[in-house]
Length: 204
Image 1: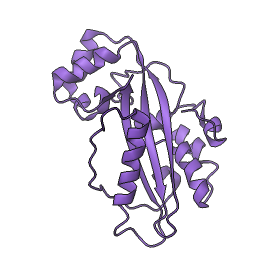
Image 2: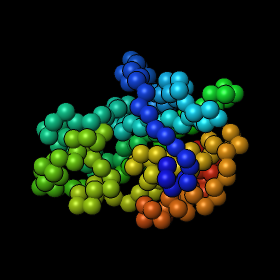
Image 3: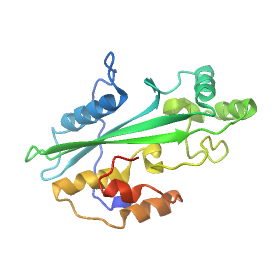
């Protein structure tokens, strides 16, 4: 959140993150984002907005969590190899004082490259996949699992700032027109969709 020059305090609310039977991935991340926002209401600073998010790596209708071990990490990477999957981030903003509440979801296509078995083995041996949903970190310099991106890189990293900025405008929060430029400079990524997101288009 430092890129937004916002004054923030963080907490980790206790919510049940189990996925309901038949629940669509977008509904799942939005439900968890809302649950986290509402769970954070107690003790929130007076006059503050609550921002909550939940991210899922999705392959078809399957939500991929963190691998339990090295073998599961390698299996996930093989399943995703040479294919495009999605990263979904649900966002929720809540004003505890007024009760105003809004949500948004960012859906980003992530095309994986044709990495080799040797690369998978070396990456899994590094230990990096074990705390990553889907078994990979997009920013890993040596493995670099993703080929050319055409969506929101920040969402795959964890927080889609343009979607958040779009949400915050509903709460009369301070405008930050240069935030997309700061985000792209920080990530070293020329984002092709930031303008469309801020215009309200359903892209990610």
